[in-house]
Length: 426
Length: 107
Image (cartoon, rainbow over all chains, first blue to last red):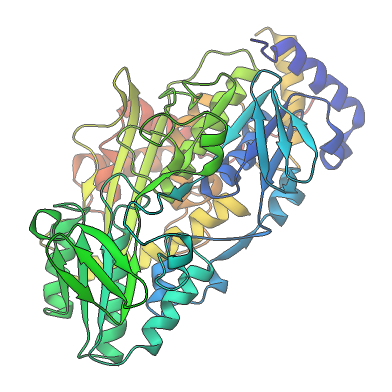
């Protein structure tokens, strides 16, 4: 395995010094080691940016991303609940390109050649890499729920990737009559954004309570417990008194089939018809993880707990929702935190240093109403057993708390969104 | 790393200066501990929203705040839970990392 040595690094650094300060703006032709990052979400975009921050100007960084704009899943429930516009959640890669001298290539990777250390692009080009970082997010396991595939999701939206799906679900809520049922089918663990289905139910309830107060929300869940459950359920009682019904998997909540034509959802022994059906299907690592041979039988990617280097392919790191990140939940903040660790480890590798002791934080804010926020947080470390949360730290917001604390957390949720998106994209 | 090597690394830091206002981007151990904080408190501790910035606090003040959150002496929303995840040494290292650059290293 070839390492970009410190000697190499210093040689490139020296060459750069000859360019003078303007070197900063003319590095796209840098002949230093080339790091290719695939996927421009919270994992990939953050990793590209922090590689520049931590490894300096001598390396060449390319970010390959299919879309010119990125709509965040975090806060997309506020769009569904009518509190924000999709535009306000839409980001681009201009700052990464201009301020951080990252070559942003709007393309898809069709093939990863681990032996040749190169990736092939849809457009026909090829990129060689010293290290490859893949952050492909999630894909859906279609047809595990019979009758629910990509075509069905155009009618009964999942809205679990933000964008047109988010808008579609919002439109259906606006169009539905007062007194209708909104059905949310929530998946078994592990899946992207564990508190997400319940935040969604909350913000839909907030909308319905004000606009269509005779309506109901039915959550059919494949599992028997969920993230921040007591906090959510307390608040549902307090704010929405009986509007939200949650059916756990062991009591008939497991959805097995959907009939798009009749808008019917079949659970174990019951059939439900609803005005709006939101199916959140079971998930797996994004497609590229599978075509590149980075995923195992779980559907996710096993990685080294310190460096996120794939356990299946050398020189390739997998971060974000797609990886098996130990105890870390599949969240935007986890991906963001993993990206920074991965960038620091790659910077250390390029300096010929051994891997550092990593440290992560995840904080997930959920809004139950515009002025009612709750959190779960943890600090994580790498152990021989994988990534684990530090004992005695972290946990959820207190169950008994004044509304002023919920309001403060709602306010900080908004601040979190501003901070994490700026730290990722600008 | 010998002094000559450090000097050249320092040079790279100067060239970084047009991108970053930090002089210690090569403190990878500090970065490892401190970078996750930026997800909420903003890059380099400069927050664009309602969460407090932490770049203007002295290292002593930041250490005192984190230790008070850790002990429970200072109530928080989430910081009381997060601060418990760090040793006192790590808290010091995090606080040092968030100090504004003391020297823009000149060759």
